[in-house]
Structure formats: C-alpha cells, structure tokens
Length: 406
Ligand SMILES: *Cc1c(COP(=O)(O)O)cnc(C)c1O
Image 1 (tube, rainbow, N blue to C red):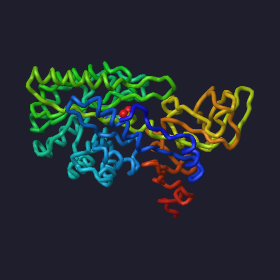
Image 2 (tube, rainbow, N blue to C red; image 1 turned 180 degrees about the horizontal axis):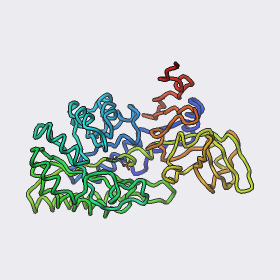
Image 3 (cartoon, rainbow, N blue to C red; image 1 turned 90 degrees about the horizontal axis):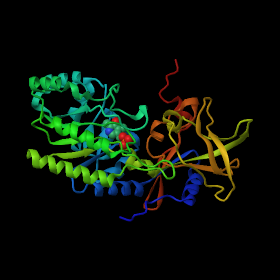
C-alpha cells in the first residue's frame, strides 16, 4: 500500500461536472480501498472484523466495493439489510443494529439470517420469549462514556436513547437466564468523531468486566467513532496506536481468563468520507452590507452536515485555482437559511465557477432530500480510472412519483 492517499484531481472533477452536470456527488473507489487497508493493517494483530456502517452511504455500487474488500455490513434498518443482501453480502456478513424498532423488524431480520444486535430490554425480553436459545443475539450496551465533541453525534452519555445501561446488567441477566437467550456478542458505540483513543480503551475495559456475565460470548463490538480530518491540519483518530493497544488488551484478557474473543468494528465515516467530493456551481455573487455571499446551486437539501452538525467541509474553487484569495459566505439556493460556510477564504469566485466540497462521501447524498421540490444530485463512482454514473439525477417525474391524484 502506498503512503499517499489516492485523490481525484481538479481536472477529473471538472470533467465529471462537464459530463454529468452539477450539483454532483463523486466517489473514488480506490480511496475506500486505501482506508480499509489502513484499518486492517492497524488491527492486524487482533482477531478483528469490520462491518461498514452503511447508513453513511448506501449506493449499491459502494456496497459492492465494500463487499470486494471482504468487509461486512452494519445495518440500522431492515431495508439496509435487504440492500446488503441485494449487493451480494451473505447473511452472516451482516449485523443488524437498529434502535427503537418493533419486534416485527427483528423477526424479519432473524428470518433473513443476519446477526442481531438488541438495544433495549423490552425487545430482549420479547425476542427471548419467542426464540429462546434458538437464535443468538448481541446486546448493545451504554457504557456511559462521553465521547466526541458534539452532543448530536455522541451516543454514550446518560441522556442517550442508545443501548441498555450497564447499570441494568442484573435485569439483562434475569431476562437472558429466564428466556435462555444465547448472547454471543456485546456492543458499544459511543458516538462519532472520537479523537481520544482512551474512550475506546476505557469502553473496552467496561466490556471486559461485563463479559463474565455472558458464557457464550464470542465477540466484543466496539462500534465506531473513528474521526477523519475535515479541516486542513485537523487530526484523525490514531488507529495504529489504537490497534496495538486493543490487541494488547485482548491478549492480556485471554491470558487472564482463557477466553479468546473477536473484536468487531463498525466504521462508516472512516471508510467513505474522504472518498467523496460534492461539486456545485456558483449561481450568484451577492454583496450585502455584511459580507459577500456565494449562492450555489445546492443547499442543505443536498448536504445537511454544516447546518445540522455545524460541520466544517473544506471548499475549493477548481475553476479559478490561481485567483486572489477573497473572503466569502457560501450559501445555498433554497428558501431557508442554508449556510455551508462563513468567512471562508476561496480563490476569487466568479458566477459559473465550480466549487468542490471535500469529505462528502459520508452522510452527504445519504441525508439529502427533495425539499423545495429541488431535484437530488446524480452520483458518480471513479473506479480503475473511469467515471461511472451510479445514480441518475432526479427528474421532475420523481417529484410526482408515488403521489396519488384524487
Ligand atoms: C452510525 C453508526 C456507526 C458509524 O459511525 P461513523 O461515525 O460513521 O463511523 C457505527 N455503528 C452504529 C451502531 C452506528 O449507528
């Protein structure tokens, strides 16, 4: 594996925009491969398995790239499970980790034969009463560790709706014992963008302490939260150090207890964020008493992360790379405040210029909508040096599709 990450250059991006129009999502298969190789290498001395958290980006062609890498899928809805099976994953390569879904959805997942991760005592009890020792399950626990900087993306705190509190372990044990459920895995996922690897290691110790309650345990799932850099100079989770510390911890646990467990991870962002680029066109340059706005032909209907999470996405003007740097506020074209970036230095932007958002692979297209009756963008996948159209741009007919005129 080469040490420089594969990137798409402005010429390739400009050509894609010329051929397929804007706004346009562009993904780079080789970058996904590169990210996966980094992850596998970091955890090579652990008995590790990776399940791509596909809610980040579910285009079937992306799922097939993941399948070819040998990874599994983490799915949060029965439809993601079906997409995974459609893409060619075997049921045992799929982990179903929903929350607040009803028993019927768990039963559907069981019938499809995938791994099931249960995140509340009500379902644990119902599933156990129904299937007992007949179908193994994993239990999602909340270790009460605060992780990540942003409340919206942190899931391990006490107010979180995710997982079963570790303080309810006695209740879990009662349900498991009475229903004879076979618990083969315990899981935690404390949030996204965890810079501090101590959070994973602390969580792992909590999981090891609880493992003694589960004699059938085969794996500990540490979820995800691997951070990637968004701003220039931004840090990312130190996965090499994490990899060796996790491996040490599992070997120590094995020596102490004689139990050999696998470690599972569910990376979403880490695999696909940097593989994605979002290309928009500057529609208008608008001077106000306060700032210079660049109004582009998109909005939070296509990329919601800046408005929803206050996320930073690096933006580059590929049409005027040598233009003088000016300060802009980049906004969208929908009738709602939809600011992509305040006070951003860009090479001078002229109407018609193409701007590229970086890190657009994860939670970009996937969280898009047709708000304002605007059409969702097309998606392109660069693979082996070729651009493939993997989703058509919406058409006007898509706005009417499914509507019944009475
Ligand atoms: C969203 C999610 C992930 C992936 O999180 P990233 O920050 O994208 O890596 C993993 N596991 C579960 C259960 C999730 O809900």
